Amino acid sequence: MTRKELREHVFRILFTCEFYRPDEDDIREQIDLYFTHEPEEEMDYPPAQVDEEQIPEIKERAADIASRIGELDDRIDEVSAGWKTSRMSRCDLTILRLAAYEMLFDDHVPTGVAISEAVLLAKKFGGDSSSSFVNGILAKLNRSREEAGAGAKAEPADGESMQTADSKAAAEAAVNPAEGRTDG
Image (tube, rainbow, N blue to C red; front, side):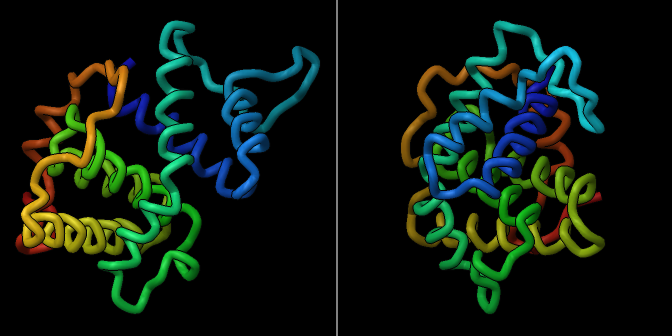
């Protein structure tokens, strides 16, 4: 499974958890339910088909992001003039949180890749203007980090071992934060 696919699973889990905040027990239950279902249960959206060895990593990453929602929302609010997180669509906000986490706390994901992948998620799951909205907010977050001299990540994600096969390709198509748009 590629890093891009793992990121999408984390996004889907976080989006589901958005409906259960701030109850930590419900969030953990939703994370567990993402990978399971009852055999006789008919589902419009079947559970994720993920290799058993990747499930703990996805769960840990989703739980870590969920535990930092307050901090991530504060950082997003700082740069989103006129659009506080309470007014954003849940889909866009979930994508922003995931990308902000990667930008701020994950040493294994280059900032340009985090932004580029967030834009792709927004195109796939968001509304018509979601990709440009997400791109703009993340470009401002990146500029804010650079201006504050915080180019380095705040702290690495423990146990991070997702494959980086997609990183090079995504980096080539990465967002140019100085202009707030995707290249190409």
